Image (cartoon, rainbow, N blue to C red):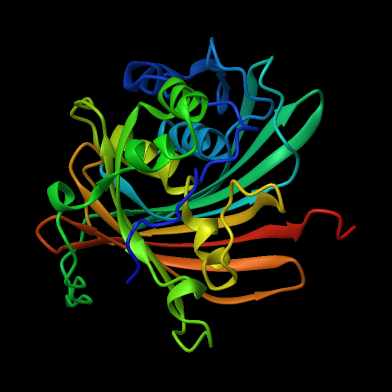
Amino acid sequence: MASHRGVTPVIRYDRRVPASLDEVIGLLDLERLEVGLFRGSQPQKSVLRRVFGGQVAAQALMAAQLTVPDDRFVHSLHLYFILGGDPSIPIVYDVENVRDGRSFTTRRVAARQHGEIIFYMTASFQVVEDGWEHQDRMPDVPGPDESIPMTDLIRLGGREALERWMGEWASFDMRYIGDNRAEDDPQRQLVPAVQRLWFKADGTLPDSQSIHNAAFTYISDLSLLGASLVPHGQFIGSKEVQPASLDHTIWFHRPVKADEWLMYDQTSPSASGARGLSTARVFSEDGTLVATVAQEGLIRRIGQR
């Protein structure tokens, strides 16, 4: 697993995100317009040009959760990013009641701006049930205190990069563990590619599982696609890469606490056709597997098309 040497800023500054945890919580407080119809606000002081995909996903999940009985919790969601969101106007979320069963509830959410659908989500909820249990073991990795604060890595890109990071991403604390990029494996024998980090909300979230699920969904979109660039010695923030989330899936295995440390164990089994596929296991600090995430995204070479 590589150290942080040679690491450059990993975030491409073309999306709009909040600068504080309080603002994230505010974004999750949707306005109810009608039965099954909600409106989500935008960050107030961002200079980024597109809505952060994790924000749309988190707000869509909140909208769906507001239509589901309190005894049912999300266990899976499947997302498609269709159009880039406009950060200058609110987003309207239309929740379709697909099914209410005895154990499972299904919702479909369409996010709209300017009369167009920019995003779709299908989510499934389940009552709490007992059953067989097993899980993967968490890899042996340095803990959060032994890992590298993301701000230290961003600082390598200069003062402006650090100021932008703190102004846009300070709502979450992230610690970089390492990766196995090509500089350490010239023959690219290490398969799949691996990239690992710790993250948590930088503060305390309300005592609501719905809020924790949505906050986790929000941050899960930040770094995952970057794992697909590890074998090629590239970063999401590189001027050589045009990145974009295409679809995103989360399976919630056990309750998530998004304001406690979570280890994002990201891998990429394949890249082809200017698309990268990344998957990840998410562990709490005590080794509990709380979620599995998968994402396919655009990783087009600049000038390729």
